[in-house]
Image (cartoon, rainbow, N blue to C red; front, side, top):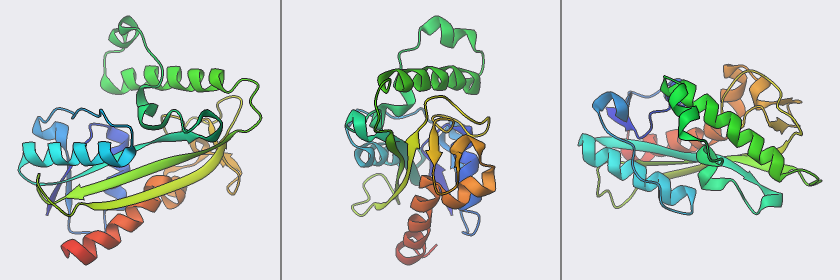
Length: 212
């Protein structure tokens, strides 16, 4: 079964491919099919994930899966939330200077992290969690989308730690594991992450409902 991933994030694609390896599913990024990213105008993760999945399914004429994820900080009322990937405003010249998509993403990640630390200056409550909302549809008008949600609680450090991962990984410290997400190798991260928790739920749904 071909399943189109409604994302062009190479690292997210790699993570999902590993986690879906037990199913008879060929996961294909929408960019490989020439599909542009969908608009994400909504205030909630589930609405944006559904919009992205329906868009990819319509453009590809195939089943699609979308992940809308981010970090929510308690003291900031849930910010950055759905705008986690573009929390900070980055000058176009800075983005243009980075030739490749992943290089541009690193520029944005650094700006996002810096802004989050600035917003939390002097704030004692550092509780936060990563959240991943997965939505899968069989076709554009599927009336019964599959929905799975995973949360990974931690706390925001005062400075980044670790060189692995992406996004806010260097800032989110997981007390149970004694390290930031950016200090975890792929097997450890994939065993505990918000996306792993959402994927576990989604795997069960795909087997039960879609009989994959």
